[in-house]
Length: 108
Image 1: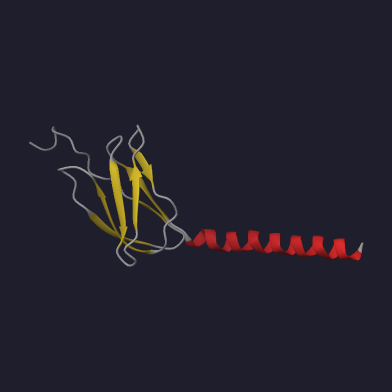
Image 2: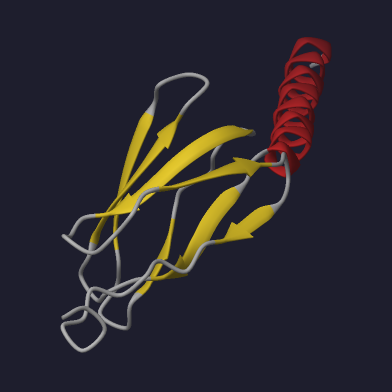
């Protein structure tokens, strides 16, 4: 009986540690979100580590990256009229980057 209680206590302690570790780690992650052309392919490059993330804008033109580490990033929407942008991402903060729409009415 004592052995079962000790095993249950150990399992509960591991679970509490895992929940605490995730709660501590979550605020350090950041997101880039914004507006782009609907269905646009967006590439996000971490200039510090070289990691690359790809995102596709939803039908309404919104996009959001998965959790990112803090650092310096380059973000670009695929298309002839889109210039890449560079930005810093701060731990625990989300950054809004609305990407310039590729529209023939804006570009002769």
